[in-house]
Length: 67
Image 1 (tube, one colour):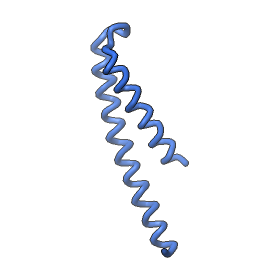
Image 2 (cartoon, helix red, strand yellow):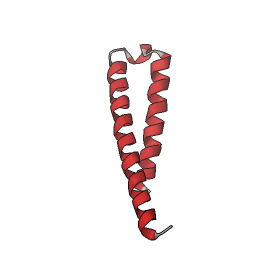
Image 3 (cartoon, one colour):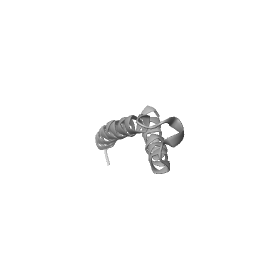
């Protein structure tokens, strides 16, 4: 495999991660908006868990993009 192919592969992977981060960012924003409809103490557990899971995934993707 040539260096040009590796560079192209790295570029494609970065594009894929950027798109994934953008999708996850939209999901997290929507979940946060939904959570704001509740009092802090009454946010349903599944919503809190989903928000946390998606936020962790977004953080992981952003970490990969920055590294």
